[in-house]
Image (cartoon, rainbow, N blue to C red; front, side, top):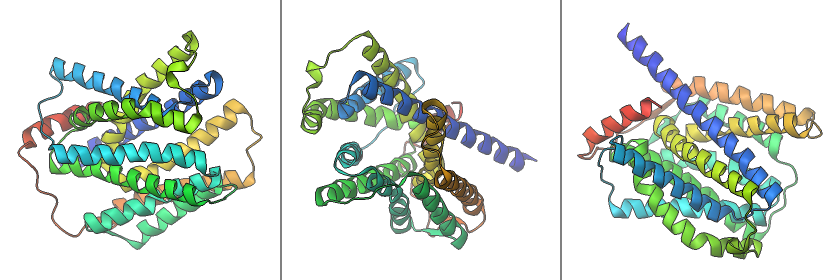
Length: 333
């Protein structure tokens, strides 16, 4: 009875973590779209720096209240993570600007096979045939939904290549650092958020000026835009935290596969809120294929041999005690 109860508890926590990520991710997309489209705040990199500054403030308060225990993350590991994460943010912004929407979506889809490759090479993960086929079905369904015109240019391809690999490495590294140093999501955010905030707020205004030819300090701030910036930063705390929780529980590949459910939800919400002119047969067909693939992936990867490690897990550091405490805190979210 105890094992079943433990499995049920894990399933409940997994579902709660995933719903937390879905709600915050879809919420921040809607808020950012309103901020950029309605108020013309097009400084995406600087805004991301604000997100991490707000997240840093949250971790400082939680540490002061005693909810985050002291932990250690070596400086070289922190620098590598920040390098991957910042290249991911910048690469995505530049890729979106230089590529067609269709090629941008294809680049995002390619993160799943890249993440699989990283797990196979670095973690010695073996995937069953059903797990591989289910991933293909997910990619096919999301591709049918989202990929329209596809045009490629050299600089756009380079930007997309950097974005895909840096994002995949950043998401892999979240799982890697949590396992190796027994860090909970709060602890890892406490280490990484300040470094990302400092680097993005320093470089962001220059990068945004290069991308948009507009200066963030010359923007006409008003009450409406400030409210949406505040909302964006507040929701971003949940988005950043839920990403770390989900990758820690599901691995980067599962996070990517399930992440495409957010794409489907954004499309559906767009139809409800902004009209049904984009709703046609091939989009609906793509949604159905993607959802079937996600359900298949969940069943296939959870079966014995569906996705397993060929070697022993990474040795943990002396932070085990702190990691257990942080993991318990994550479970309460």
